[in-house]
Length: 119
Image 1 (spheres, rainbow, N blue to C red):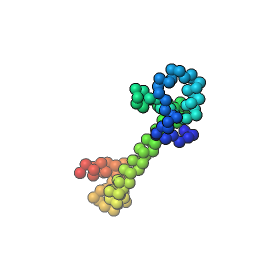
Image 2 (spheres, rainbow, N blue to C red):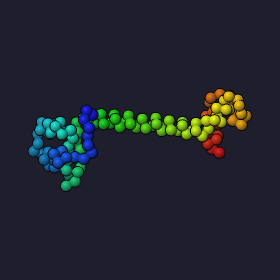
Image 3 (tube, one colour):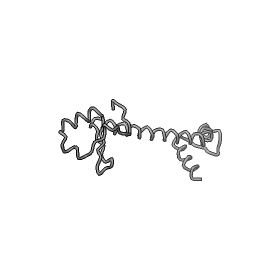
Image 4 (cartoon, rainbow, N blue to C red):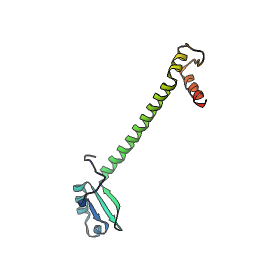
């Protein structure tokens, strides 16, 4: 979105839903473009939010990008926790410096981690 949207609506951004009956499509679009978003009051309560389609697309794209980034960060945290918990033992076993956690290749490390987590 090119502009920052606030969660709250100003008085000018709120219209009663029954006003739509007397409003032309052109004036609705002009109002929406001028304000960026509109809140419709239905049965005396906030009921519907309107925004331009392009803004909606950008909002969804941004949310999906944030979800992906959160997933990536969670994976990084998990990797850091694994290294913090098992790092020294795994590095030593990979170098052959210990027989307690001996591994022959990298894929064995993941099997070892699974076994250690089950204990």
